Image 1 (cartoon, helix red, strand yellow):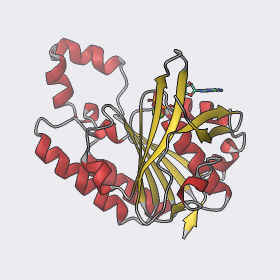
Image 2 (cartoon, helix red, strand yellow):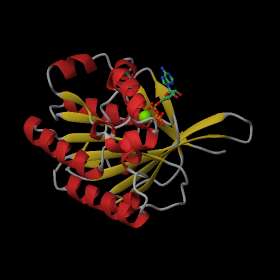
Image 3 (cartoon, rainbow, N blue to C red):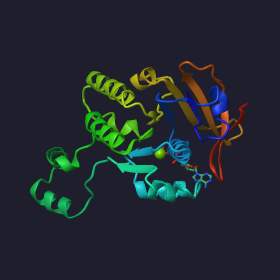
Length: 250
Ligand SMILES: Nc1ncnc2c1ncn2[C@@H]1O[C@H](COP(=O)(O)OP(=O)(O)OP(=O)(O)O)[C@@H](O)[C@H]1O
Ligand SMILES: [Mg+2]
């Protein structure tokens, strides 16, 4: 079954919508619209009765909610009625008294951050376990993880990290949610395990054209089981959020 993404102009590129229960990767450069796309997708679902959850691994939830309410004033009501959940699974500790104390005892920052469990970064395993619990508890049907990059690059062993990310994605698929994993797009031609493992891959770009104008664009790279558009399409931030438009000619 195909479900509406909530992004104007996007579903027409992918035969009418995302396949329910599948897992997608949305990769883009800084400020390209990843978080906006993700929250818009969740809000659209929750307005249709599909409970959505935004999993924050690096963003401050209050700021995301504030920014996104500008596009959709219903977001606060959806949160209050538990149709839309914002769950913070980022490192919990804030700079404060603890750090001042710890600095007196362990002045070496690396030593300090390794030794204090509250200071440790979330791992694919810890995030999965918590997400699994929340999905079962709240009946979540749409999931956004912001971002995969936050649980990557934490291991000094790249091969074991690839395995760990691959396992994370496979386990997420077993939850049955329609999931969008957000990730930073550093090198578009550097293929990663998350691109192979996901059912679909979408890139968001922002770049300067030859006239020095910033162009925002969306491109569907892969969409299993779907005859999809492959072109660079314009992407616009409207009053209601992201909107996909026409073909881009540089
Ligand atoms: N009201 C607005 N009108 C037009 N554009 C806006 C508006 N609000 C934000 N933007 C644009 O949205 C961008 C941020 O979008 P978003 O947070 O979704 O991007 P992102 O890809 O998640 O960024 P990051 O890489 O920092 O996580 C801003 O940099 C700005 O260009
Ligand atoms: Mg973001």
